[in-house]
Amino acid sequence: MDRKFNFNPGPATLPLEVLKELEENIVDYSNIGMSILEISHRSEEFLDIINTAKSLLRELMGISENYEILFLGGGANLQFAMVPLNLLKPGEKADYIITGSWSKRAIKEAKSIGEAVVAATTEDVNFRRIPKLEEIKFSNDAQYVHITSNNTIFGTQWRTFPDISHIPLVADMSSDILSRKVDIRKFGLIYAGAQKNLGPAGVTVVIIRKDLAERCPESTPPMLRYKTHIEKDSLYNTPPVFAIYTVKLVLEWLKRNGGVEKIEEINRRKATLLYEAIDASSGFYQSTVDKDSRSLMNVTFRLQDEDLEKKFIKEAASIALFGLKGHRSVGGIRASIYNAFPIEGVERLVDFMHRFAKTH
Ligand SMILES: *Cc1c(COP(=O)(O)O)cnc(C)c1O
Image 1 (tube, rainbow, N blue to C red):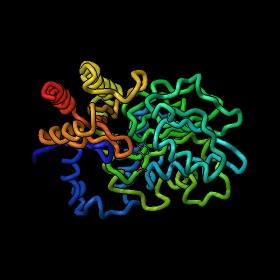
Image 2: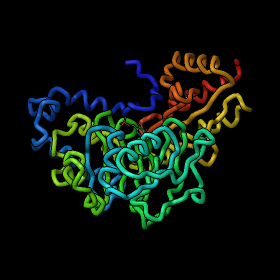
Image 3: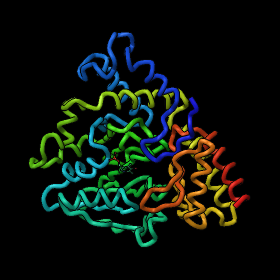
Image 4: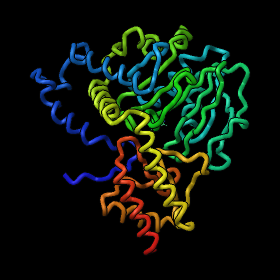
């Protein structure tokens, strides 16, 4: 197989080792004479898979027993609704910090459920930076503060999280979970769709402080309560079995390769290579993000005009650099370089960028 360097933003590249393990087990899982896709979610084999995934996540992220870990369906988008459905009672409010398209979606869902207030936004500068801590106007009576830790579309990422010990911090970490060391104790709830840094589409990880699950109003349907899923260990309904199995393999891969500390170091090296290439191009490539807000996961930049960008994307694809087109809402170039994206692909892209700038 002629494997491409896949810069897609999500679903995104997976470790080749994991794909090979899947291939081996897809027909006959662990010599039981059945596929992983065919066995019960209550079977011994699957319980072992989900429990292993959970404990690996606990270990890799340093999650204490104070928190529950859930594997749910519905994507990060369902969490946009589940968070307010569980943490807001009638008449209560929440603060949202708006740093891009996903936070806008999140507050839209929250507004359909309760009062959601914009505590800060950088929309006036087309989301080219994360707000400074002193710009954020927290409400005194907010039940939680919601942030998007990495903005997949705009290429920005929170460097330091707000210290608000008295209000639970809720974070959408879909596109940077496990990419760097994070102090879990700063958060009340973290959620992440798997298809960027954790595995395939179809499963969403929720990490929730136990006391917060108790807040849920009676009016919330049982299926949408965190408490329901906690009580049933993520087996209230049939969970996305195959996606959870793949997440387990990805977590094992990450652990084998030195865990979060090591991957963070590699992620920094990969992103630095790209940002240096942009900054050294005398304006041929223009970063769309302020330096102190640059993402380690999604590197976004522009060229002089759209025709040149099209040419860039096409020529890159011809040397196996695939998926570099920016999101349709912002245009330009976006290189998504999640945990599983190999540094060799970044080196090849940097090389290509130098050559392309010289010839154009
Ligand atoms: C991709 C993404 C989402 C959307 O996830 P779905 O699983 O499609 O619902 C939400 N938030 C962020 C930060 C994302 O990167």
